[in-house]
Image 1 (cartoon, one colour):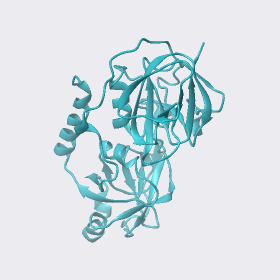
Image 2 (cartoon, helix red, strand yellow; image 1 turned 90 degrees about the horizontal axis):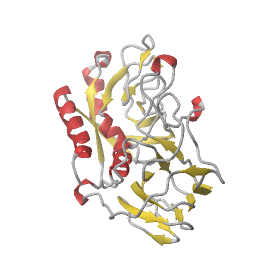
Image 3 (cartoon, one colour; image 1 turned 90 degrees about the vertical axis):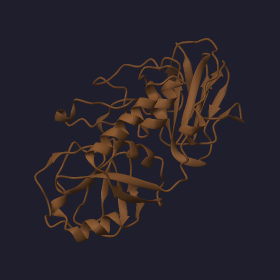
Amino acid sequence: MKGFKVLNAGLFSTLQDQGRDGYKHLGITQSGAMDEYAYLWSQKLLSNQNTNAIEVMVGLKLQVEVATSISVCGADLSFQINGLSKAIWQTHFVEVGDVLSFPKRVTGQRAYLSVQNGFKLEKAYDSYATTLKEDLGVKLQKNDNLIYEATQKKVTKRVPNKYVPNYNEPLILRVLPSYQNHYFSKEEQQKFFNSDYEITLQSDRMGAKLKGESIRPNKGGIISEGIAFGSIQVPADGQPVLLLKERQTIGGYPKIGTVLAIDCFRFSQLAVGDKVRFEKINLESARKKTLDFYSIFKRDL
């Protein structure tokens, strides 16, 4: 069986879906697509039902061995077919012998390459999501074969312009105050919400270590407890850590709040050295914005 042959695996190319839920009691993290917005659009364009996609971080090169429709959404990584630049946030039909490549980062960090009906893989713990620390999923290697079924050419579909994000825009992360925010004085909270924070090299799929105004809780540690996606932990050095898709399942640092999940998706397209700010949001607004976000993917194109 054939599909894509991996000519160059690139920087860090993995198979992902929306993540692995229901196994945190076993110490298994959520994982999944860091930018669900781009991932979901790559799926919707092909009418896929939460199948898998390749999360690409530059350098990936694939040879097509079975004709099919694909979609590419997310970061601009100079996507090419046979050396010719092609538009993203849309579908393309690729034929046997075509070479797909992502040679250079322009904006954003992660692109999502989906194929019609998904790649033929076995799930692990009910998900295709890849997390290397738990030896689950697929990290692409040179000469790998990614199997999918042949499909016929269809009408090209594109994401409407109003839904295509601008990754160069400044990002303000909306924060639900934590039930532990009383560990932070009003002065410390004011510092946090009025400061710029820079993404440091100590950042990955697990979480992002930020650098900026130091904030100090009045309690140095707590009993370890479950960690929500987007939690902002504050360790002893006072520099916030934003916990992401491969966060640990439990932790023992005070949390000043939780970033709205849909903002974490956008955050995943930022690079080391980029800066963010935080602002408070209430539960009602957070719920409405989240429902509005996911409702986009229930509408017809």
